[in-house]
Length: 180
Image (cartoon, rainbow, N blue to C red):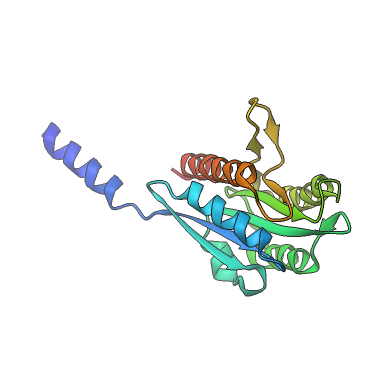
């Protein structure tokens, strides 16, 4: 009897649908997209399915089906791009009264220089995600301190790629844990 119960539990867990993570990215130069690809590589853990979509192409069903959503944006005058803002507005409409309740979210960005407002941009997106009741997950730095999420000034270098992969892995692990 115990073996039967164990086999049943294993088969239920093994047949569980993967937890879906959506990476919605707006990229003009390819830099934000490159950071998104590094995040996806880190998030590719067992039990998780990761999709990258251009922000302009994200559909309501993509957002509703995702257990976790990552928003990638270039910095435009210390704020997210207009395309990213538009996506956040649409997400609020698509999710309805429950908004992002029970879903995780995070943000990453690229800028033209280190002092171009990356922190302000990420905080702006985080504020919108918190208003939509998402559980916001940040990154971690080598020293163990938390961060708002990955960033890159210009094209992602090796350090930014490493940070992005670590963020993707942390995001996937915590999203999986919350969902299951």
